[in-house]
Length: 374
Image: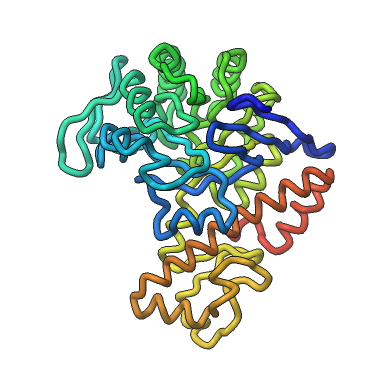
């Protein structure tokens, strides 16, 4: 029997070095590379747990900051933890809240002890530290929890980036000391902004630690995509081959492909459901805005050949009508499609890696999805 949090590296693509793996957790096994739908507030917007299973989701992400503010970790613990609270019996990962606090900008103050901030809900004064973040995540009960880190903006100067990287490293020690539950895996987060030497240094520091995986944070915050890829080219080779690598907050189809090519195993992002609610869907030919007038008489599915519920039951014309009429079903259908597009993309990527054919897959992918189409 595999141990909880054991990572099996099943195959490495001979031409690219992309990885096919399997991560075991107390709530089930995750086939990697994997895309994780985001249920920020213990719910993936507009999609039910049984629908997530039907479309192939193996793990979902929830957010410590938002659940700490509402409904509170004590209530979630009283309910039996996140899995029981939201009726999801597969693995869950919780972000530490660091990125959300970073996003508050004028509402927060960073000190060595932690971050003081005002709630975006009611303006109340709050405080998050490495110890508080771990305590909250332990009560939430996710399978994988993240260290509390300091994220920097794009652009930033090197001194700011180095200070944040050093603080993140110091905060990791406090997170590890505060952790008490053996049934949760704690991932460090590699920072360093957009400076390759800082990224490499931070990755080399955390690589020897007795942890079950690694996060790569502070990317996809506004920088050009080639810069993000440059940072991955620096970080991934420094991390152990026998542990999963999680690129945080990245979920555009092209970024998933490029991340896998560079050795990333796990991804998450709200992009799929966020753009879906505006009527935008992913297809093999790039983005399609189904609200546009040209689809008013188009009775084809959102994407030919897609096996999602939306594509197997409804037309572009019908879904456009739902959007124009303000029907909730519209955003549910587009959300289901986008999530299935990404889970199917990862299924196809895994199969390609197993056959040492990822290069061919990527070439075909970009024939229909030009790099500037996302």
